[in-house]
Length: 492
Ligand SMILES: Cc1cc2nc3c(=O)[nH]c(=O)nc-3n(C[C@H](O)[C@H](O)[C@H](O)COP(=O)(O)OP(=O)(O)OC[C@H]3O[C@@H](n4cnc5c(N)ncnc54)[C@H](O)[C@@H]3O)c2cc1C
Image (tube, rainbow, N blue to C red; front, top):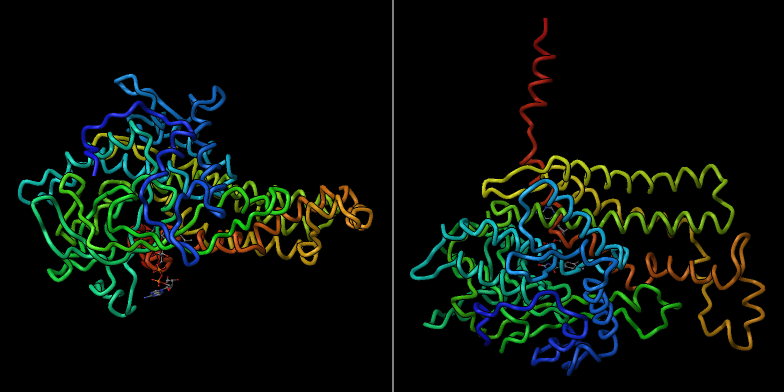
């Protein structure tokens, strides 16, 4: 494996450089076969191209100063890697996240800024990692080196946090089964050897590096020591296999499948078959209790939730736009019932915006001397959106109804039935082709496999809902509101 600890890169990459970097020995499996090259694999290559296009945007005069920064060594890097030292830095991060998200209208959920935010937080709070120092290991130095490597080489990261559960009873108790869960089998002079599985890694096949970070529900029990670690390795590490789900990009044109033809980001289960993880790539090891606190105590969860809120705002605006466009096309924008329904999604969108505003404007200095957004509004957002999004999709289905099935393909506008299609598929305020394009877009949001996966993603990608709700409850200042009730009951 290359020694990445000393490789300072030249900063932001072009799309072509990113694509060239993916053409390595990575072991990716899909639909019964090993993929030779993800950059040319049908069903994968167009997602890669979209991401490459986003990287090219970093060089574009229109976006460069919004989404990148120049560090003290004169290297231009993604802004999401910049350690925030003021409220303005938090506001600038928010603008950059939002810009990235609008390039796919939130439909490419795992843009690299999500993981960059997490890595920035861990590096900025690296003294936290020294609490877990083992032997000669220098966890905080390892983290700083990896951060600088990823930052100055514009590396794209994925992560995998969850152990597959053979038994939910065991998992709920925070105990892992070493037949499947990823665990350490051996320590050597070079590093640790790990075996087992993790799920999932969204973007895994298209990433440069994978962070294998702690599952946050690890019981502080000596039996869990082999399961407690945080490390990062290249996707093309020997013994690492990514087993992908079926693609949702079925080769259709941009007209026929406007989202799935562009934004297939892929998800994979990750198998580690006696993988060597070098000591210099390990950031935590053997301390379950410390692992449990890592995302919260480094504020990584807050910075990630900030990126997420910006992305969800872009996505909510896009869905609101689709509903409004359909109402306008059919003339139903004058209809009282329709206004009532669409106002519901408008309010959801504006709630996300308001929570984001509060989080950014209440940003404050953290325990490490860096700036962090206010956590509670972001926690509120990330607990609400998994409920909002399925409702948004439902509204689109209710509004679209059979029109979501009245969707001839692009070719039908050029063949023997084009006259029929032109004649019978128009609506009050849209020509047939524009109407079909709009409903095909709606279909890709609320009916297609791509759209269903988006809903599943929104429900789960940030963690199990019951645990996220419980954490919200635990962090809430309950005494303050109980005191109000008590003082009311005690008044004479
Ligand atoms: C599209 C998609 C992309 C993802 N990408 C990533 C990624 O890139 N990296 C990553 O690490 N993870 C990723 N995940 C995984 C995600 O973190 C998990 O799906 C999530 O944490 C839930 O865990 P689980 O899937 O094992 O569900 P389970 O733990 O099996 O839970 C299933 C359901 O049961 C509920 N449940 C379970 N136990 C209880 C209980 N005791 N009380 C009440 N309800 C309970 C859960 O809330 C959930 O609704 C992704 C998931 C999806 C769907």
